[in-house]
Structures are given as structure tokens and as C-alpha cells.
Length: 484
Image (cartoon, rainbow, N blue to C red):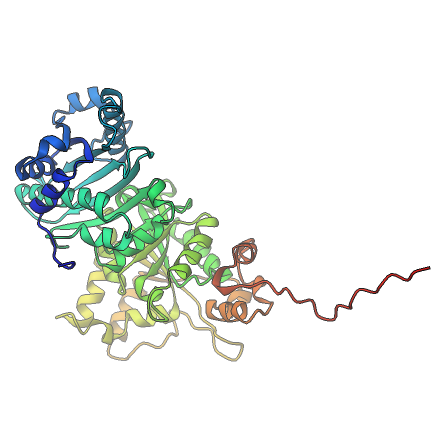
């Protein structure tokens, strides 16, 4: 019976029958379907103190205030909603009379697909809630993208998801992974995509929100998540909307001087492009889920180590499920139609033009490369020289399979593939795997291969298996004092 998935109606009824759960529902935009489940389930009078829908924008502004951006479907609006309604609940209800009640404030702000527009629907949901009557409340906030074509279908999906979120807050809060998975009960990725989740409060002190974001990608609830320099999860559309996007993919285990040299040189080239504005530019350090699984199952500590370092040096980090670059570019096109740039090494360039990676496509490599270069994209190639005996490899002399070479030459001669020339020769033999091996073997020398301060961060936080050598070789035993 533990594996039985309850319907939305059953979950709503279970919440209604719990004598402790009591609060408010506030829904604006197209999200009025959630509270309907609770009214229909029966016993709602013991759960719902108030339900409201400020559908008119002027009414919404009068209640919650106008956003600086003028937007209504945004995180700041959602936070104002759950905060205001929770405070009103506390102000208006006598705790002596409701001393056994666990207060909650559920809110959503949703925009479905308009009848005259093909833009996908999206929205925010959140719950502020107690798990006992004496504690400060917890918050759970999610962002969703709606993939169905009809507004009515999207509204029904929102209704089910809202009930799932409420149920998870009260009955599955002890297990973050079960919490996340339960949001898709009676739903599928074809209907809705959850691309951001945050949990805050006393009951979630042990939870790192970055790991929740990783769970979203791991469980294929979304294809990518983004973290800002402060380490917090960001909503992709807020970061990427109408931006020129420059991406560097790597393992960053740890980040090296080569990675910084690549991004510096690539950025200098990218901003020279006519259609690139420095004011509307977003740089991303991207790690694929496949890279995180390089040694088997995902190591959460290893994941946090990588993100910690990149964020600490002021970078924005993206974790994605896109093994092929053309899929990554498709994802960026959701948010921006401006010029895109990719920085990569010679081995990655060879992979892009290797037919074996496109066998799943009906049109093979022609289809895959066509999807990658059918938009305004520049590929910046950093040279490769694995050792002193090897020749320097660039886009000009890299080995490409003969039957694909004419296709490759076409894009190179049309300057869609560009070499980076201002690289540092001393960095060419630096590799993350070499640094990692030195760290794990407690050997020195790796410190000069990573950016300034990164070695200190690794040592202070003991990242990537670093351990301080507490032994002092050759130390003599202290002599006893000579009594006179």
C-alpha cells in the first residue's frame, strides 16, 4: 500500500480531514483550480479559513502592491501573497481558540497560453506552513512551465500540482527526494516542467537547495537548473531572457587556470561581434549530468564542491541534461533570440562532428549539425596540446572524418568556428584530472594550476578529498628540562 499513489481528490480529502491543518488559498491569474479540489473533496470548512482570487490586475495591485517590473507572474509577487495572507491569518485568528491549528498560506500566480499566442504557460506556486502550532513557518516555492496547448488543460494540471504540493508539505516534508517526486503524482513531464524549487525554514535547515535543483534534473523534471554567484537557485527565464549567452562546458573538478583562460579569451572575442552587447550578456559555466555521473552514481558532495568553487569566484553555474550541444542551444532559444557563443576544446569540437553521436536522428549528422548552426551561433575553439611532444591542435589541423570534412570546412570558412589565439602557453598541459589526482594523493604542485584563491578554498573547505597532513616529518621529541 505504501507505493499507492493517491489521486488529487484523495489527497485533498486527507488534508481536509486533518484537524490541525488550517489556512488560506490565494490564486491570481489562471490558477483558480487548486482550491476547487478542496471544496469538492468535502470537509473543507475545517481546512479553509479563506479563499480568494484577485483576478483583476488593479485589485491585485491594491491588495499586494505593484511590482517594480510591472509583472504579475513572478516570484516577488508570489512571496508578497504568501506573506500577506499568512500575517492576516495570524492577526485575525485568536491563537487561544485555534491553539491546535497548523497555519498555512497557499498562493499561486499563473499565466496560461493565450488563445492568440503560442508562448508556453508558466507560473509560481508557494506554501508558507507550520508543522506544529508553536514553530515559525516554513516556505516551499516552485516555478513551473506548462506544456499543454489548451488553457483549460493547463488549469487542470495546475490544480493537480497545487494539491500535490500541499500534500507534500504536510506529509512528505521529511524526505526531500520523495517530496520532489510526489509533485508529479498523476502528472507527466509532457504536461508540466518544474524548473526551480526552494525550501526554507526550521524543518528544512538540513537541506541544501542546490541539491533539490540537482534532483529536478536527475529525475528529469527539467533539463537544466542555474545557480547564481551567491549559490542560490535562479529561475532560468530571469537569467537568460533576451540575453547574449556565452557558455563553457567542463567538469570543473576543480576549475583550472585553463578554464579561466578559455572564458576570458572567448569573452573577448564574443563581445567583438556586432550583435553582442556587454550590457545584455550572460556567461555560464555548464556541467552536464552525464559529467556528474562519470564515476557512477552522482556524488552529491562532489557536485556541491564544484558549484561552491565556481560560485565563490563569481560565476553563474548551469547543470543540464543536454549531452549534445544542439539541444543546449534549443534550450537557450526558449529565452533568447540573440547571438549565442560556445567555448570548447578541440576534443569537444571533434565530438560535434562525429557521426556516431547523431545515429538517433532520422537525418543523422546533417540534421544534428543543421539544428546547431541554423541559428546565430559562434563556436570558439581553445587549442589542445596534451604534452610537450604533441603538436598543437586547432580548428585548422584537427582530425575530422573524411566524409564529414566538407561540412566542417563549410562552417569554418564561414567563420562560424573560430580559433582563440591569445591563450597562455603555460596552461595547455593543465588538466582537471591531473589536479584531482594530486589532491587525493596529498601531493603538492596542484596549487599553481588553479585560479588565485581556489587553492585556499579547497584547503579550507577540504574539497575533492583534500586532507591536511598533520604529520611533521623529522620532528624531534621534546627534551626534558635539566634540573640544577
